[in-house]
Length: 96
Image (cartoon, rainbow, N blue to C red; front, side, top):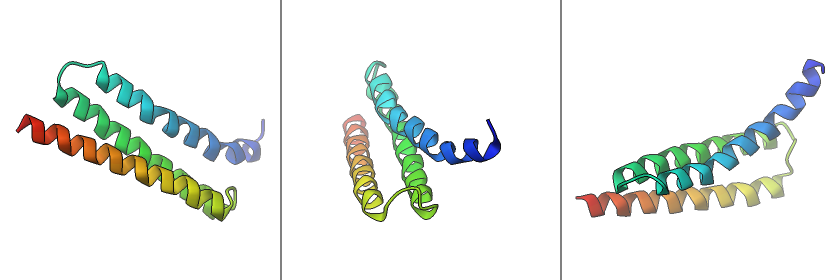
């Protein structure tokens, strides 16, 4: 496989990986003991959501993703980040 094909596929693979790691980290946090461990994995999931947000922006800028699709998908990622942040804050308030 040549480098051009590899580069053309890279953003999609990175997006899939980041998207898959969001629920995987939530699930792993739920399987741990204590709210501190859950909060730690929720922070990791938030980082994965930020990574996905970046890859969506990059795909749009490289014209691999239509603007309308970008707006829909990015809006969903932003909502996920809000939900994760809210849950982290609630967990932190419970520990205090």
